[in-house]
Image (tube, rainbow, N blue to C red; front, top):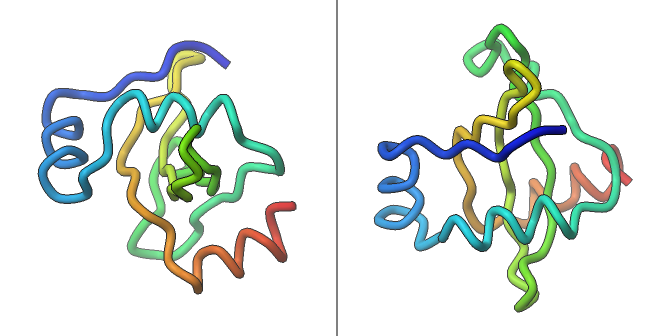
Length: 95
């Protein structure tokens, strides 16, 4: 895939609300093992589809990264510390 794109608004939300940096998001893309899951819940459906995965940063922090692929690039929608429910879903369906 192409470049990781994080808009200024999303970057501000990541830093202020979730205490997540661009570097951590990039580390998660690099450290990802497993498949990408599609968020097909009605309220989250988009075109193109919303994809997500859980991976650890280089310091071992597990983040859920949510993004869309457009024109070959990955547009980050959000990223935050994964909760137990999300981790269980990814362990059973994503790996």
